Length: 119
Length: 110
Image (cartoon, rainbow over all chains, first blue to last red; front, side, top):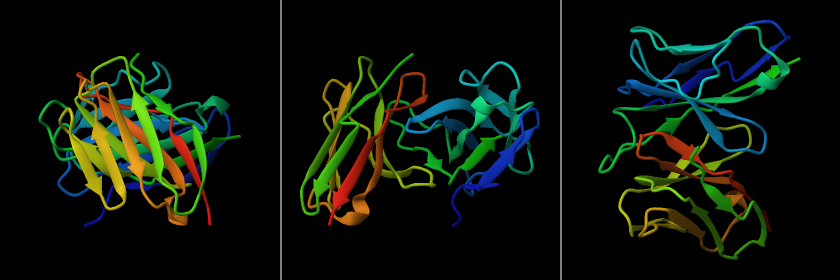
């Protein structure tokens, strides 16, 4: 049973280019979460998606960042016109039902991450 | 926004020693999770705690969910070199969002 898959594992972009990060959730999971981790920091929530719906994007920067989770295929986190400050590890997690909440015993399982370096 | 304060930031211990780290918050959390992250990898879930006061073990790891729902600790007994890594506490807040602590970096000397 494959875990959460992310690709590419490493991505190098020059300033101004676009970065597209992909996440395939675990089989049977229809809820996807994206997080960003800066060096020596914890993970910070960016966005929560279900199939074809953005549920919570309160952690996404207002400009240049977008996310989607289409009916078919992986979830995509897209960063347009990248800047050096976008360099970070981006992690995707998935769960079978919305994770969290009192009495909810489901949690999130993380992928290996994509390390984005902006030159 | 909500924060989890994790301590200590780093620990250097001898193989065989016990380790304790904790997480506190000024806000209530519904669920507490402890993750371990190895270099270049994603966080791996170690222990999940769902009820206030709950004490749960997973091998040499023991974690407790504080009775006030505002804190949790993780203990590792008889540490071994492969315990090296960064340990994160995380909690689901009442809005269902997963909030992470800053991490505790553990180094184990053989």
